[in-house]
Length: 493
Ligand code: CU
Image 1 (cartoon, rainbow, N blue to C red):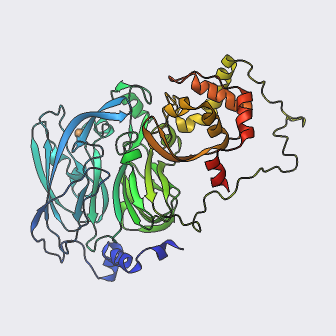
Image 2: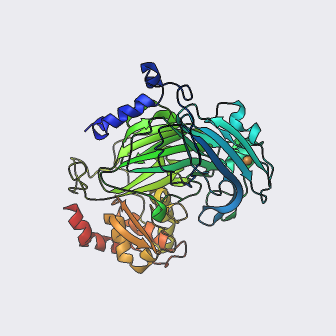
């Protein structure tokens, strides 16, 4: 089915007609303010990510009062890592602001008396010098007011522009303002607000404690953290995004930078429609879309099948090693025509398949010598772990909240050695609870020899406060001969 076929075409045409260029060419609409009269006044509803204020139902522009408070707060950046964030509204990203094309916005920027720094705001939705920056420069304990007319519809970034600008942005001072086209956007079942950004800390990724900002790393554009919504794991586990099958989902995506361009992708979904760079032009059937630093995009898709869908920056080390990972859990009945799940798992043995690799002169490469002692298994296992396991479970075994269970101090591993061997040999699908947190993802069966499995598990068991078990190749062989556990065997049929 084409994406166009999935969307309410009539409504979609209305939105395009009223969204700007096409409408102006047709003569059906004019630029804001030329025909429409501003009526009434209202105070804007502001929301913290990932929530979005309700759609605007007015058929006329109004005077909108925005009250935004600047707060400097210490909050978690990752598990055990604290950071002193400078914020618009107490969280990163800043509050979501939603107005309508043609609205006249009275903007009140209030800098809390506890702040140490002056701050201001540059809204990309503003047509005027600095996007309001000079007019809104506000010392601690002061309030500034300016106003602007929302002439252009679109999804716009706002950010602090107080010197040093890079530092104010790197500390978390950015958010999104949506200027809805006068006809509104097509209705969807769910709307969410997600913003990517980077953090530069003096300590390396995961180093515990209150981490100061590193100007040196920021100038080198070498962040320790790339995250969605202000911290590692902000949008995973219980805090992840949710939807049901058959629903339409719209993500308002921003990129606060301050340096990196995002290659935004949702693993297992195709964007039916993308409002390119947060503007009016729509693209359809998009896999990965760019979000410039200081830019945005709007992506829409229909959820067809249940499962966990993972939002990433597809510059993929940022996702699995720096935090740019969030989850969307879709509940509902399966549709096995659209996606079957695994239907079979059989041995594939092409002719000559027993010879895994050969040297230049054609002789088979000898397998690495088998580790004979527990100490050798730990050493060999460390290399296997770094090459195969660390991408998901992380180098220090802490896992990724909502996606990959921790192997460090893992009650699940330490309770049952045979089960751990079986998991590595045959994979694991479905819900598990590890250290009190539930995970529902897929670990693939890994093509490793008995010796490799023994070594990597011995390494894991002898690190990170685990039980200290030794796992021998003979034990692995025994589990392998016993075959996959019943649940795995059933799912493979
Ligand atoms: Cu600032």
